[in-house]
Image (cartoon, rainbow, N blue to C red; front, side, top):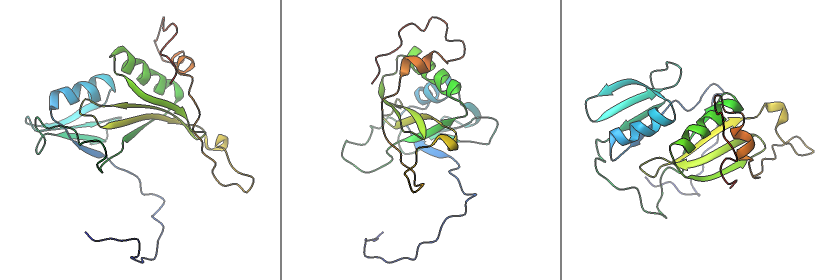
Length: 182
């Protein structure tokens, strides 16, 4: 493909009903990936295709996440400095649901890459077993999004109080001090 900045294409806005439907990830080990996406994050398996692929969803949709080993069985993650997917992002419906996901991630001893309050959302960053970046986040109510004086969006990156977030996790009794805030 030979697209250059000099290629002039008249921009047309996407239909406002368009949205990201699913991600399909190449993984090295399907069972290991299932422990992460189903066992820890909680996505439900909707279909399996032998030993080569599995489809997972939240809430009964056909699939939000697909995992396969068709071209990647036993493979290695891409080297740093190469192009590719930066991260997949999973939005949780409430801050408490995000807190529950964080609790399960920490219980599984999965290290965090970061955590941030972006003004519009609160996010946790980590890696799946294949090194793929994963963002778990909750969108703040739209009327709370930061805006400039002329009403343009004004996102930022500030620290996120992980201990305070964990206190909202359903069933997270005895959370204690929580992780070191990043």
